[in-house]
Length: 468
Image (tube, rainbow, N blue to C red):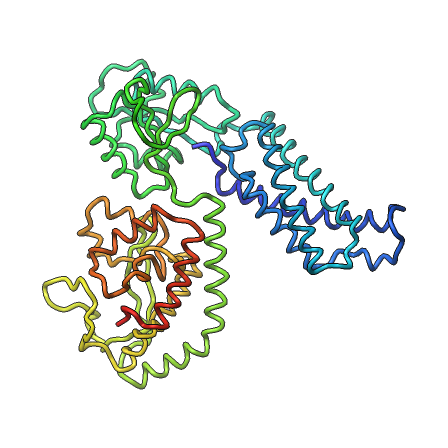
């Protein structure tokens, strides 16, 4: 609940990059004009252009590892400065290592200037930000807008804590009743916005980012209430937490965070942190962009082969369900005999597995499927943001209509060109196993897992395992 918004995080990272670049420039200026160190020509103290790229990357990486970009780990100024200094020390060691390996002629005194100036600028940026926030913060533009489900004493205590805790960048929007029945409440009409049935419209109207459910205890009624709320908000990018009467759940084993002495139990969190999202999207854009450029000649050859092999379109556009249930058009090279009515699945029953000897596959289509070349146009889907390189496979709408509610959790992350189930059996596995594999990926997500999947995908494609 206590976190930077995406815009705040990007602004913070970009401002840090600017501070590092300015520090490098000024270090060059100081080395040329201060009468310290060994004299030399001014041209010898110019900062190499490549360092203006390498240095910010090193510092941002080190600061990220030191949790400088995690608001919940930097609530107090003392902790933030401590984390910043630790990250800065790590970045300095990396910076000097890079200079030793690739920039032997770079002035050592100039590197000291750069390191000291960088620390001064990074500290000044945060001190100024905190000062401006305390003076001019607008409650209508806080990073987290909280809606509380419930009107009991616990709900009111939590609401009061949010209201009087400006430093946590939270804003209480209001309360909603747990049932449609009026019930007894001490909350004024201005604070009570409706019932849980109004959650979707309230999220849209007030820009809600976090929902906190106030419960007295965990019983069947409470479980049904939580399930109902999760279903109502599944299409919205909001976090959901539970604020129970903690005297009754002392032995409830789950992760939690404390706010003003009230435990908040997380039951729905974004899979990615903001930094992971930025890195994942950056990798998607860079990789897919290069792939589209490098594969352009191959695209022309495949298009010519498809045209000569059988009549029909070269590309197919198939409607799929993507991130948070959004529909999009996924592109593939045509590998089957063209059907004028656009149907690829015949008969009244669903085809739950790919057929190894499907008679509809063309001669060129067999090669494309065996080598997975029919999937190459999806790099365009990745580039525009409909898909990611790694994630659950985009599902067809008719299949999603038959999903159990828990299976829809696979849409909590962007859908991918490749994923965990593709590298663990691909088309050899029945489709009802795919969802469990997708949920495993979501539960265990990390950038390292994405890297492993990409490597294993390359191996699976080379050996053609499960591809037909």
